[in-house]
Amino acid sequence: YRLKTVSENGQVIYSKVVRLSIGEKEKGTVSIMPNPVKDIMRLNISSFTDETIEVSIYDFAGRQMKTIHSEIRKGKSNLKISDFQSWPRGIYSVKVLLGNHVFIKKMVLTK
Image (tube, rainbow, N blue to C red; front, side, top):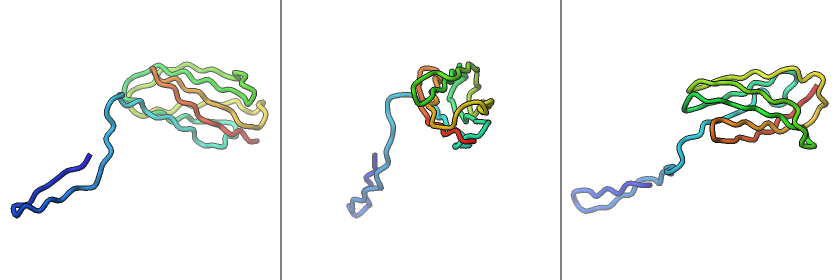
């Protein structure tokens, strides 16, 4: 999107192009802090509505290691997940279902 302006003397000037998102309603965001994770992982979640959230963590082989269900409020939320000390080091996939939206994040687990 950009604006076209015409001065009184007829000179045409265009503004910078700005991208606008049209269509799908905003879906929120999910991030992992800290990453790499030692024993405690925090999911930072931003949602435009009150939502039910499901978090599933999978190991490198695709085995489901943990599932958590929770309710979050509109706005910014923080979900603390712990007890990773018995898990092997490595890369895990964190799948977050937020309403009708799916987020897949990578988590690195260190000791």
